[in-house]
Image (cartoon, rainbow, N blue to C red; front, top):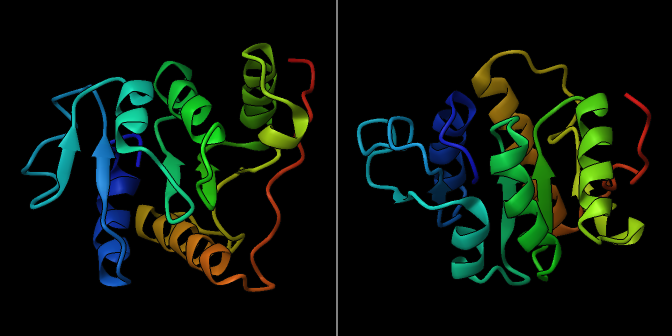
Length: 161
């Protein structure tokens, strides 16, 4: 997970409970603390360096949660170059359209960008951090298991701001 935000605090224990080994990446040491994420591996590097060092493979899911392009986009860049089975990014459709444009500028093809599930999570009309975490984890598990309810990643189309 990129981003030691409140949704991550809810998502981490849920993901552990279903069997995922979890690492939280966030260079902001005030957010990524052992008090907020007890017993979790925390990496205080920029997301591109951290995700690259983690060497995502076909058993890896990468979820970005910060809403901050300077933190999320570099991690997504590395994830898109990997074989991870799931890539998700928090944010609205409008936010994602801007993200798509930025990733295209970085050289990613439409098909590659189309791997990103955004807005992240199944649409269960989630509002609270735990509900959003549940929707994300449900989508990750569905993708891992090949369930029909796992929606395809969002189309990689950009819209003018």
